[in-house]
Amino acid sequence: MARLYHVPLSPYCRKVRLSLAEKKIEVDLIEERYWEQDPDFLRRNPAGKVPVLRLDGIMMSESAAICEYIEETRPEPPLLPHDPVERMEVRRLVSWFDDKFHHEVTAKLLYERVNKKVMKAGYPDSKNVKAGAKAIKFHLGYMTWLLDQRRWLAGNVMTLADFAAAAHLSSLDYISDVDWKSCPEVKDWYAKIKSRPAFRGILADQVPGFPPPRHYNDLDF
Picture (cartoon, rainbow, N blue to C red):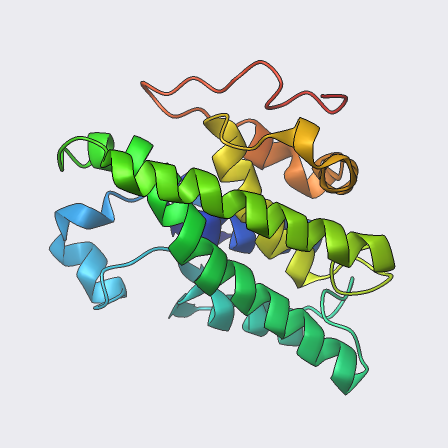
C-alpha cells in the first residue's frame, strides 16, 4: 500500500490526498511532525517538508511533482485535460493557489491560528491575521469571476485546479475562516466538490485542540 507522510490541515497534503482518493489509490496516512526535524524523516525528504509519498517503491516529495507523477502513471480519471492550452490553465491555477493564495491567505490565517500553537512557536500575529482576512475576499471574488464563466475553475470539467483550491479552502473552513455567505457561487462549487467520495477522508479529519465547526462535514452546509 502507498504511504503518505502528512499533516492533516496542510493544503499541499490535502491536494495529494484528494488526487490519490479520486484515482482510488489506497494509502496509509502517517502524521509527521516535520518541524521536529526527525532524522528518519529527513532521510525521506532532506527538505524537511510534507507531503512525502511512497508509491511504486519510490519516495517522492513536493506536492506538484507528486500530483504530476500520479497523473502520468494513473491517467484515469484524468485531472489534467489533454488540450495543451487547457492544461496550461489548470497548472496556472494550481500555482495561483499553492503560491499566491498560500502566501496571502493560508499562511496568514491557518498558520497563525493553528500551526504556531501546535509547533509551540508563539502567539498569532494580529497583523497577519487581519491581512489574511482581507486578502481572502479578493481571492473569493476572483473565484466567483472564474465560476461565472465556467462550470469548474479551469473549465467545464473538474481538474487538479479544483482540488488545489479546495485543499486550501477546506483547511480554512476547518477554522471557520471562509465567509461562504459572501460568495454563493464559490459555495455552490465547494458543495459539489465536497460531496465527492474523494473528499470523505478530508471531512473526517480531527485536529486535537481544534474542533471543526458544525458545518465543516455537512454536505448541505
